[in-house]
Image (cartoon, rainbow, N blue to C red):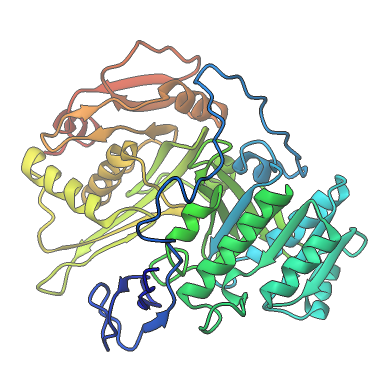
Length: 455
């Protein structure tokens, strides 16, 4: 039998090597490499005759499967992000910054699911049971039939789940779980990987829905190995600024529904309150038209959302002007600035540029290019767009404007909130939304010239 070799794993990035080193070659961290036993691979030269397995049942693509049953909790924003409700025997990972409200959200969700008839168990590895009960009292959830435990030993937790057989188990958090079969400290790569594997396998085997809470690193990713995200069925990120009342729950992976779906919540004194109309909330503080302020008609998952983009352009006292972005990609901002200078003749040299997405939102779709360009030119030329206008469209490096998807949904959302004019690229099928005047542009230079008289 082949002798199993010892392997070494970096606790910071999860890189595996065959020998120990003081510094990880993959991420550059010092003193982060620990020794761990590899998984058994079985005999190296075992023949099929001496190690037969069972025959796997095969099906074809025409096999019809009934959709998995779902349980809705009554919080429409959470049910939307989950893809229509909670699926039995599913594993969900919820990540977010410390203090953002993950525990509050999941305690409220546990209470809702328990009231819907699901036997629910909430396991806290970070707080004592008394602290969780105090939070529940503050949120008005003390009468909810939720079973509570404070434990970090994975073996004890699995034994309790086996005995109680809940329909939903919430583990807060996966970084605090400790398995006595792994020789490393809680929160290490090997401990997180082992705990996630055991809990996910238990959920599939026993038909229990499991929700895991995961901390994020300073780069915004789930702390621990990325393999944890591949183990679970759904990965949700809880986004927002702690000093801001808005919170965004975003699905980045979902085997039972659409990915990139969002749910919007507002942090109040009594916990998180769902926001049924995010567009109205994000634009609620918008006053008179000001230079640098543009409303972007975006799509988040399957939902159209109107978001305000704010830009400020000012002379720079430094030799290297600043480019500060909040809520958007900094590399894409640099591209838009280069296109404006090369194709429209609008220089930004010697000018500090600040771009902010209002409401704590984060935008990733290219359809925001034209709205960003409009905000930048508006701030530079000190000319405000009309208050009843929305803007969307993608900008190519040649300066041409490219059509984007779901134009009709964007326009309908704008019309519903009282906007009467829209600027979008040419192309796509002709559209006529009642109450909206659609102005189509072919390239960025014509847009800047017609709208601001610049370039």
